[in-house]
Every structure is written in C-alpha cells, then in structure tokens.
Amino acid sequence: MAYNKTEIFFFQKPENYYRQDFVRKIRAEKNGFEYLTLYEEMFTESLNKNGVLANFFGDEMIPYSTKELAIIFNHKESIINISKI
Image (cartoon, rainbow, N blue to C red; front, side, top):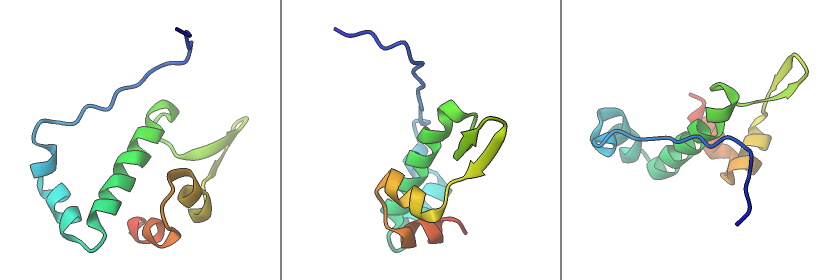
C-alpha cells in the first residue's frame, strides 16, 4: 500500500441535501442533473484551494476560462456558460 502525503478533504452533504429547495429547483431545470453534478464537482475541486477555482502563479490568481472548466470537469461549454448565471 502506497502512502500519499497530500491532504484529504471531505465534502459531507446534509442528510436532506437532495430535498432542499435549491437542489429541487436545479434538478427541475432542463439539464438540471448535469448542473447539479457540475456544482458539486466545482465545489469539491475548490476545497483544497480555499474555495477558489483559478490558476495561481505566485501571488497572481488567474480565473479559469469556460473552455478550461469544460475540459477539467468534462462538461459541455454551453453547460458551463449557463451555470455562471
């Protein structure tokens, strides 16, 4: 068994997460399940970056482009663009 020295973060959802109003509203939208999956993936990805999704070059922070996010999370760019609203 290999030992990895990186930190491990956990994302625990409340017991009634999928019954919350905002989750139900998202799921009711066209492509809602894909939006919800993207939301959870982005949230999880930002856990070890202090809640920020961006490239860091020294002290400079450069936000990801729509195309980069589509590649990272394997979603269509159109889903990423609509999710920004």
